[in-house]
Image (cartoon, rainbow, N blue to C red):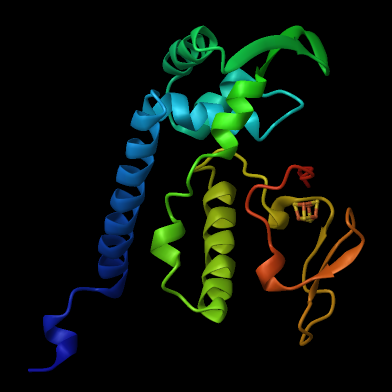
Length: 197
Ligand code: SF4
């Protein structure tokens, strides 16, 4: 008998572990939503909209929250009644509507606790940097396989120059900021992101 015979495949154990971490984060998020008087979907959409001061489309907010457009529309209506989100004309298309956070909506979103913060807090700085690289890689792969909506990560940004200085401590470069980047500088949701596609 050896451990290869009695151990479940590593991908299954990884999936089990990640599922547990996601459940803890979801629970913390729901507690925060409850104390703010919001449903989890409303909380998700509010934070998505607040991160896009130029305005967000309803379809994009629905894709981000992983809900149908009708469900997102109900959540936006509830956020409107609570004076957290309002509708405005879209600057890029006068026939379209852009969702924007009100001052109070921005205040609620900015005060939102990070549900994964207590989960990653036990890792060293180096471990967090390694994990960030892996998370960005997984997001990129999911996006390439069209399993998630487009995300504002460096690796899909037209300003990103990947590994232009291999072997150095800052192998990447951001043409928007005009500065070299280390792995720890990679962004997952950058306001200046412009799609490379
Ligand atoms: S603009 Fe933002 S997303 Fe794009 S490369 Fe620079 S830091 Fe990354």
